[in-house]
Length: 311
Image (cartoon, rainbow, N blue to C red; front, side):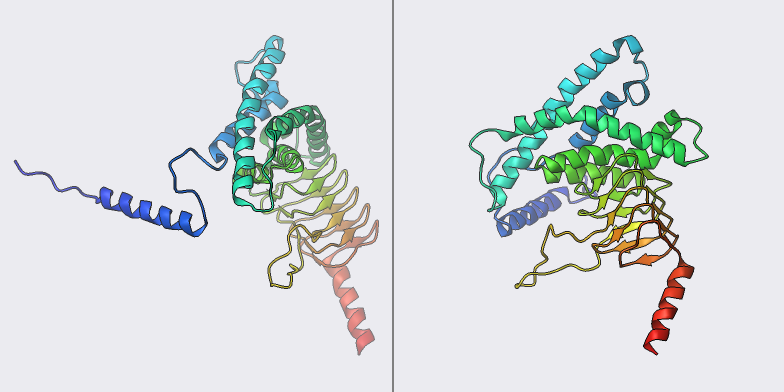
């Protein structure tokens, strides 16, 4: 009886993939010894954040069979599981940083427990901030029928739940975990908020698709932005070797009560003064005075005046 010819050359592909992995690890000075996972897991963090959403808003984002009389038990049980899972991910990041980033010294103790403990203590404050975001969305959108609809349906609120969690992780010194949490929301909503961005209370992203908020952006309280808004960098300074300088302030400062309409692009370390309104599809690269209204028409008038003065 003849042996059937396989459709696919699986053994060869597996062998070639193993060789490619080995070459990459050698080139990047990674361990080629057998062992466990070195990096945090995106799947694990996705479950952690989903469970945190339930713990923060148990009767609306928790399990469908939950009853109010068992709410505290559910929150406690969920947090106990979530925080231990998060602890494992934090340890992976800290171990990875100590192993592959020369500027990071291996800690004498286990700072992962401290990080997760401080994160857990910040959860009530995160809940209060998220409540202010939900109220801002409800009060700022005439189509919203209830705060519950906002929490259950609005992509901007989902993005902010992830951002408030990611920002706290970023502050506590686990930027890779924070970035993964942010990118999970980015994938679901099309809203890209770097976890380093500082955002005040009552932040409302209406519609949201295409919004980009950079790492060093600072946003005050009661700010409202619409879809396709970019708060980005104008230029990227380099060092003497031509490498990008990281961490420098390069994104806008948005003061309290600012409104930025759809498609606006604000670049560089400029300040949008308190109460300013930025119209749709405008390009802003200089400071905007408090209370100002910037529109395409006003920018054309300003550019015309400059051209006339130079003539």
